[in-house]
Length: 443
Image 1 (cartoon, one colour):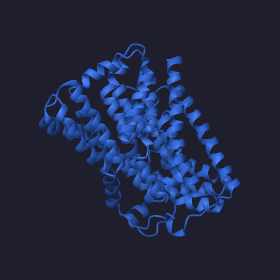
Image 2: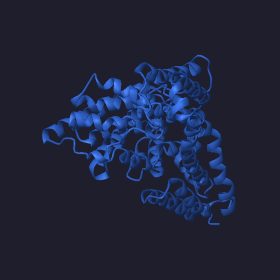
Image 3: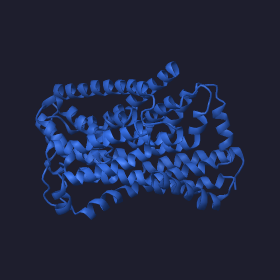
């Protein structure tokens, strides 16, 4: 309808800005993506009807086709780990070994273990421990929250070999594995860990100096899930084995049997779920019920699949904008190191989407193949840059996941966002750029 480059560009920019504003104002990400796609479709070459009924819906369907099964497989494993209280058992066993000023690091450690296992609902498990730990240590709950939100940018977005979705996604677009550029990955992770550790120590010291202790009202404390009745906490060995199992088996599938990363994740999660059932038969069959256990895990993931699919569809419509090829050529012709270009563009798109995974998928779908084929660009290094860059501006105030985390920890923007911003935006910008520098020098 409006196919001139200037007008189409204006519609594209307006749609993206509106998407951010609508998300910030509380509209669901999927709905915002659909509405903005409808506006964006006015500036496409294919026309409004085709862009919405074919391009956008095709994008939603393509995402579900590629990632629906991995999401559902991870959902089953996550649900079983949470409802058998295995995740809590891991944390409780470790609690006796440390206390006081080290309590926030215990929370971070447990969150890291659960993240390594691909448990997307880890924050609910860790929150059940946070209030008692922070109360015993007489530390404000915002420090416990800060310790937990510091973990995902490092574990899921920098470490090699992890089966977390952010590390899996680029393998489909770049032809890499989850072990892409291990040296660069570890260097990035070390920088992230040091920054987070020093800052958390600073927060603890600052709280002690100012006499800021635990002040959260008991009514706000997050309790265990009682939906299935009293569930006995399993032994530590029984709780930790599924986590070790899923990490080991997915690694063996990829590196020894040479099975595709996504297929390795799916099979690994299925086998790990069966392993949990074998280890906890009473809880699964008597307290929860086997059919409910399997159904709960898969259905929990449906909203996430749909939300990410809608954003992916938004990106597909953006690719059909009349101005898209014009600006793509401009970006591709910029005389800047491609690693820097990739880093900057992923950071910005992640911020616009308010979601690192959706932003990464959008970028990979548009630029992944082109950048990885450029002379002098190593797909392994590009994999690492894209993943680490996607966890930068995705935690701006309009992030739905940020709001969810604060709600779980019964805190708010005024109390906690300044700490969250440093740990989830500023520090990731620093360590992701370390990956860029390493790629330029060594790759």
